[in-house]
Picture: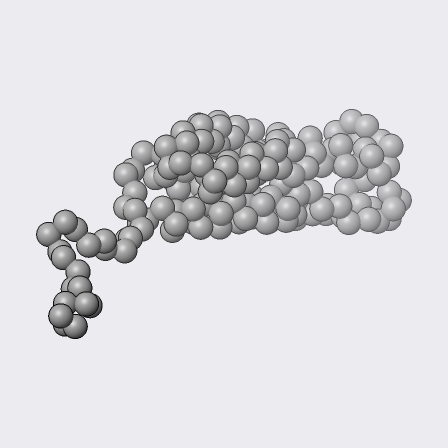
Amino acid sequence: MNQRNVMFTWLASVLLMAVLAGTPWISVVLTPEAGGQLIDITGYMVYPVASALILLQGSALLASFFTPVQVGRVLAGGVAIVMSWHLVTVATTLVPSMGSSMGASIETLTGVAGLLAQQELVSSTSESLLWAAYLVAVVLNILILAIKAIRPLHALPSKVKAGPNQIGMDLWDAQK
């Protein structure tokens, strides 16, 4: 895998994470007494730091395009460590974070605070598996960052230059 393929794969994984974090992970329908509204809880609402991490990766990716390969490797290694921390955080605190985001959204719309009071206002909830797809995208992103940081990448093939043993034909020799 060459440097260009790794960079485009990195970009694709960042875009995939951005899309999956913006999709609804939980949909909540409130009772008619509470307004009967549909509330979509996205990954950005559950983990607001996800947007900062995606912007961090975008800037590291952009810096990797304009700096030497070694700088890009250091940036990828640093971002891989931060993304590993994010993966552990999401995997261990997903359910409580989704519950607190749902509670905050219900409180904002209805003004009712407290989990027991809010449960009476919820008509139905549906959870999608897009949070699992987001976790897979984060794992893929960490693997790509690790490949860029650790594995020696093949350089793009360059044009072959004439060596000192290869003497070019003198066009004027035929005229003499």
